Image 1 (cartoon, each protein chain N blue to C red):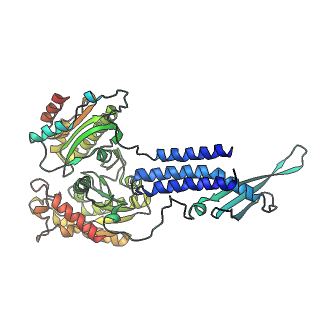
Image 2 (tube, one colour):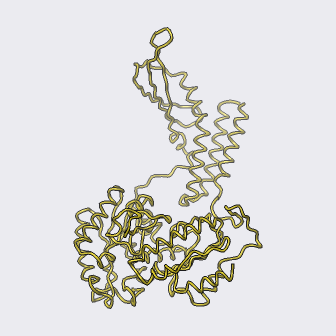
Image 3 (cartoon, rainbow over the protein chains, first blue to last red):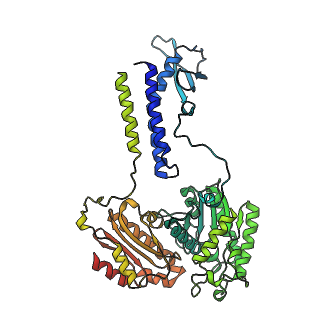
Length: 342
Length: 165
């Protein structure tokens, strides 16, 4: 059977794979993994054949004498009949070695790197995922987001989970790293240390910065502070907030950080340091930090307040307890605010 | 030789398509402990949750978690679960009613015990009332059926669970 027929058979197989791939949903992680499996299989099966083609073609090429120890790289453009053009790069290294008769001998080693994309992209690449630089908004904006927070954000997490389980899109594929009693202060210590609280990622307790890394988020929305007010001074909380942001950035230098304002307290539940005045004072510090670090300040509190600067009672799920947690109505307002802002 | 090569490549292409098949989802008859469950041994967990609900033992506002949610909330892989009925208070803390028919009971038990300790650590200084509730809780095991009731009504929920399995 001729070389032409071999290549034709391979093209038929690729077309079949392309037809199957077109029916698959690329947003499904199972299918994406399947696509990767098929790509690997295609690459493995094509490689020996293409390499064979390279070898056949390279016999007609002129080899260049090279100096000892020098790595020469030559790039050849191969054109084979009935196939697409592809690029192969050959790296050749010459090293010196002594032979039995003490005469210097040269050893040539070479490897050929073949760029499959140029071969496959000529209308025969069922697995290419085109790059896009278009801006995204709405739910899609949150696909690579993670929300970090305490029990207030935990309420948002449960609201989002309920919406998604009901088949309604809600904040894209945003993930959550929450712990009910977490604060800027008690999350600073190492995981497992006494008097520390950390979120869990897939059931395992992790630091905030490690959690961000493990979940692969590129956008970090963070709302903490409410649990700090009860036990710590304003300056201490501000310092601890800065420490938290520094740790996140150090571990995840390429993330964008969005600092959500601390939400208000119902009027009947203000007490001690737990006041809306302190909440506002802390939020003003967060604005300054955002200006300094280049973060984005997200003023969730602005859509939760009544005329007295307190959390609206109709938005609160625990008006007879702590007076700070959101109900379904306020969670929807929260989500709508985010979707309209980004 | 070339014919053999063509046939071989075709078989690889077919095999790769087969490998793209859906491997997700639990198999009701799988059991990693080596015990196979027959249809006649299968007792659904949902009626237990329905009975708890009928006796008004659930919180006022709650969400139902699916089996796929359990990895995020409790570190429980969906492969370990035959069937689950899980409810959590919408506020995110306080009530958690977890009933699982496990294909890997030891892993599920371990994950829930870890979760219970995590919650105790959280609530110890944050909410003494909630900590007091948590101190009375324990992971319950009846063969492949595992449950954790974090609630003021945990005692009655436990009775219903033990009556069923």
